[in-house]
Amino acid sequence: MGAFSKTEAAYEKFGAEEPFYAVLTEEKYKRKQIDQELFFRTGEDLLARQMQLIEDRGVHLPRENALDFGCGVGRLTNAMALHFENVIGVDISSTMIEQANQLKRHENCSFQVNKRADLSVFDDGQFDFIYSDITIQHIPQPESENYIRDFFRVLAPGGLALFLVPDGPVLRPDSFPARFDKFYREQVRPFHKRMRGKYQIQVHRMSQHRVETIIKETGGRLLSVEPHPQWADRSKRYKPLYYWGIKPPV
Ligand SMILES: C[S@@+](CC[C@H](N)C(=O)[O-])C[C@H]1O[C@@H](n2cnc3c(N)ncnc32)[C@H](O)[C@@H]1O
Image (cartoon, rainbow, N blue to C red; front, side):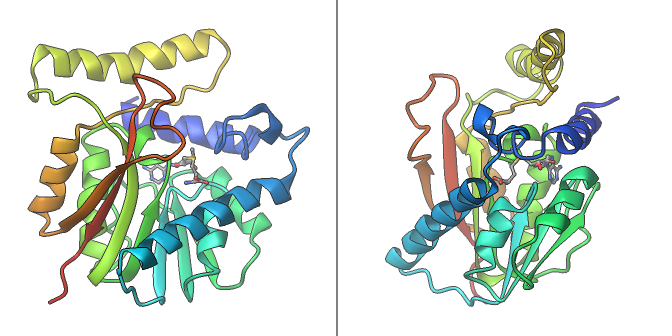
């Protein structure tokens, strides 16, 4: 089984057994003690902050169609539905989407499974806003790169993609350090997790240079790159960055 399919299988299992903890891996979100209000409030607070930043930066988005990529149980999709007319949450895991449909709080959001390694299920220029939080990091390369490219295809001109990717070193493709890093993240760490009875979730990184190159190649314009406000100093090895990319108006 390839690394991409392994992630899919891990989230099918995780979503069926511990859908909230699979999203925010803190003990309090385990099924036996979950406070769903608290869980969904974390999404509303985060979205309110992001929407405020969008406004502060003078980015004027039509508030019509939005996409939540890697929506899980809909923590952020439901929050986005407070700010946009139609929101679609998409996820590779059918067990996550099953929960998202059961827990849905707003009529103007919907959920769909997408098992493809791209966003070909969506039309060009369909969304004003794409948000993706704590998802791309779980997808191996090259698939994660395909999704980032597709963000800028499915965005409407003038639309904004805001997504989180942990920063990593610049490695020459196919060099020994690049192949070692891939092997370590796709095989070694998931194996250790399995040995310790944990879910085999992979965590990947991408250099800022690589993400910026992809955005440039799609014709997107990078507005800004910012460290995650809470996690920037949490660990030396995990440096998540928010990328703000605009599809230039025609
Ligand atoms: C840590 S959860 C985050 C969920 C949500 N973004 C949130 O913050 O509430 C990661 C999610 O990404 C999904 N995922 C992993 N690979 C994916 C892919 N290739 N396409 C879509 N979703 C994916 C998983 O199934 C899981 O629901």
